[in-house]
Amino acid sequence: MIYQVHIPRAPLDKFIDVLIYFERVEHAHAVDRFLPNGDTEILIDFHDTPQFIYDNNTLKEIQACHHVWASGLRTEPITIPSGNGAAMMVIAFKKGMAAPFFPFPMEEIADCVVDADLIWGSELGDLREKLLDEKDIVKRFQIVEGYLIAKFRSVLNVNPCIAFAVEEMTQRPDRISIARMNDKIGYSQKHFAEMFRKHIGITPKSYLKIMRFQKAIRTIDAAASIEWDMIAQECGFYDQAHFINDFKHFSGFTPEQYSKIHTNYQNYVPVG
Image 1 (cartoon, rainbow, N blue to C red):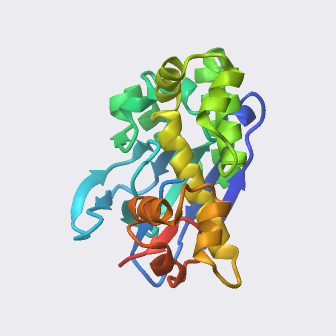
Image 2 (image 1 turned 120 degrees about the vertical axis):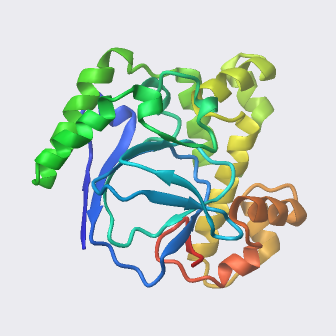
């Protein structure tokens, strides 16, 4: 198994969390349910055989992804291959920071996986060909980094209101209030919701629900013993009923069912 990461240099470091390269990964299972986590990614596949997305319930193939594709922020789980035998590079954006790299509002790719050719034309396909010609992984990272800086440097601007809102909801989802946050930002709730949806892909209210769900995932994974009413309260849910409903929507499992599933990677649940 090969698994390497690269932290990009400025100015990309404000927008991209990490570049990841992996190959020859082997898992005992073939299919994962990938839970909503607020992230957007670009994936470059070094193999010609397609990667499939599966129906969450039947596990039947519903979409084939070829060579390079983008995965938008999700409000529902997505079922994907576990990575066995794959060779891929992942461009993982920081939360809320992917918008400058896309030529359309982020709401157009929310809950979607889209071939790169439909977004950027042939450019990322050409980048993939350059990567295939280079076998050194470190140099592959450098090629991707150089391309992204050359292509997007002029549009790498941070919207301070969006950055503030994402940081608040990510870091303290149990304590934040959308109304109070809007008061600090200075926009009306309707105007900011429209702005947020264009930059992030969904409304602030929906994003906050995902961040509360993520806090619940981390709390459950780390807990030696579990008191469900306390977890619901600590993660910012209105009550235990809302906690259970949201958790099942985002994962397909009740919190208790999830707590009994062994997973080595947070947000990746073996299902087949």
